[in-house]
Image (cartoon, rainbow, N blue to C red; front, side):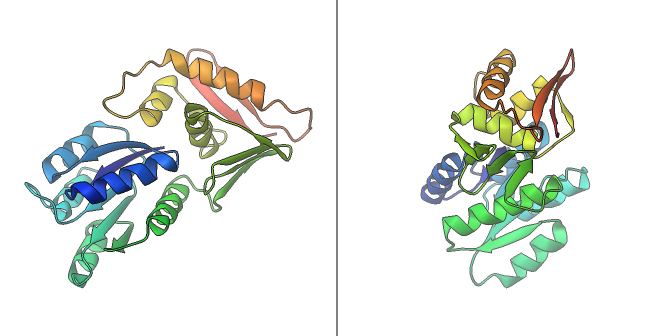
Length: 224
């Protein structure tokens, strides 16, 4: 999953970036509202962490413009402790949730997981497809009850597919959602990651899921 992190405080942005990377997210960053709006308009992000007190263009204006343009990615706003009116204005402008500074990183990650789940119609932090189970809180993957070790990119591909069971996902879409803006993207590597996942997640169980290749179009996670 790909997160747009918008925060002008360098120290806090560094802490948030580290926490998001540690949780398995791909992160794009902006430290002002102008750049944030551009990235939100042009990049395929799954959620946004948006500070409202931004230079150049304030966060509330950026959020209003996104919603006016029909951009519906989940947005978690960050507000100062005493600015309760910012919370109200942010929610009215289209924010999905808010956190008041200072906050615990664990709470931010939990709220972000919840927003992404709701956006994809998932109810639980543990994604289940047949005998495949992915705990998005810990990053732990099991197949038929047995733990499966995944690389960072394998995890990102599987996480994206398991949030969309039964949905056809193109290689280009997967590439956009697992690599940051400044990364040298190569959609051909997606085939490599999918091939590795198939080998690691083989199961003789009748309740096994599988990743189906739809020739010329992409991949689909097929429930049993």
